[in-house]
Amino acid sequence: MKRVVGIVASVMMLAVGVGGAQGAVAKTIPSQGIVWGPCGKQPSLFNQVLGSFRKATEPAPPAPGTECATVRVPLDYSSPYGQTVKLALNRVKGRVSRDANHLGTLLVNPGGPGASGRELAEYVAATLPPSIADRYDVVGFDPRGVGNSEPALRCVDPDKYYAPPRPDHVPHSAAEENTLIGRAKEYADRCGNLWSWLLPYLTTENSARDMDTIRTALGEEKISYLGYSYGTYLGAVYATLFPSHLKRLVLDSTVDPKGVWYRANLEQDRSFDARHRDFLAWTARNGSIYHLGTTAKQTAFAWYSMRNRLRERPAGGVVGPSELDDIFTVGGYTNAVWPQLAGAWSAYVREGDVDGLLNAYNQHAKNDAEDENGYAVYLGVQCSDAAWPRDWARWHADMAPLHRKAPFMTWSNAWYNAPCAFWGVRGGTPVTIKASKELPPILMLQSRHDAATPYAGAVNMSKLFPSARMVVEPGGNHGISLIGNKCVDRVLVDYLKDASLPQRLTCTGLPDPRAARRMASGGAVGHERLTELIGR
Image (tube, rainbow, N blue to C red; front, side):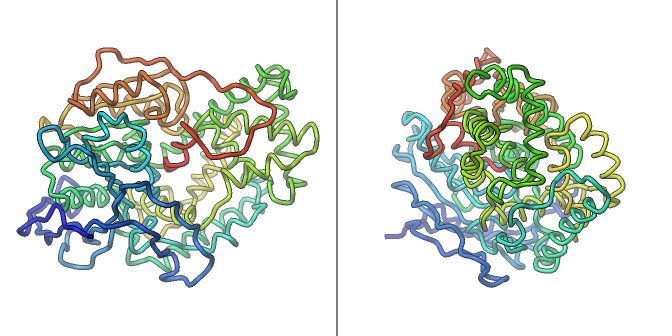
């Protein structure tokens, strides 16, 4: 039996910007309610425009008690009665009735941009202690263009575009670099040809306004928000545009607001290289198990030698150097996979066994229709949010010397973002993040050696919000709440309960994983599972 909740009786008035927060004008947004119902299996929307390239992966069944719905939002907030797009939502209702003990809606976003928030909603509701989860309705949403939102952006056939082994990310000649430039331009052109009507409106600012449309449709005066990774930047933009609409704001693994977006990727190259060296040092400390060297210098030589070997002879005909980069990049997000990666590496080098690398590729790096959708939206948002260099000579001038200092990810990250050099929509001016007296106390959670969102960037964000307090743990994982760190989770729960901020600003990190020669296959748990949900 479907039922309607959060119905707004009249047309609401919102301040919506024509060119950012600074030039906002009043526009009317049509009122709407939300009709919640069973989630079931929703048909893939990937074939709407391009035809049937492949069948999308069947979604996992929703957790018991999860409800689903859609909300319409204006494509262009300066024309609120014009064309609309649909956002897919889900909700895990708290068990406490809507009285003084109920704390309202907790909206969650895993980042990306381009990641679906619906699985994260189920994860958060299941992982929070019942004493607090029961007091919130945890709501996830697929941002515009993502997943089961309509339309869902898709630009290429993933089976063809990502067919392994791909060209080496690290070009060894001008001809190889031109091949990679051609791939980036091809992707940008395909997206522009198919989605020229949508791409100008894929921005963080519009996603923040979508969040407020969701809030209003839910019938909430204020919402609470938990964002990871890019989701912290989305939360900061929302806090800038709608400060009086927030009850709680949690930013876990925070984006540098000064680096949006080209500079942020250069900083990532340095921090991922440092984190990869942490992994190589850990492998050396466990040299009696992996036999790849007993010093970081020795394991670094072994790793890059493996990479060079795969350039000539991909493992199983599948894992070449670019696939290897993708596999081991996951180790920069979470050390939970270090034993698996080191075991696969050791088996390949010492025994010629490719199964471990192939299994790791299939689990962590193989791209399907869902991944391509996320990548298309990632580019759509980042290429449009801010200006990118349009002259490839600038990219090369930045990457070549940086690669010599930080070889692990400089070129692979460059090619990941390279379509922005050719994107059909030129980047605009990002929203200027700023605080307001109307904001609640803000909780920030950060690891000191986070590769994806470096600590220095989180400090930059904290300086913009005087009401923020940042709790730091000394590790390097990306996303530190709800992965088993009791100190961090206690801080989060106390804040969600009554907005109280801790006096203590540090937490002990989780220990490094235990080394194991062979890792049993199975479902991801703890931080590995959260890493799967956080957009990267």
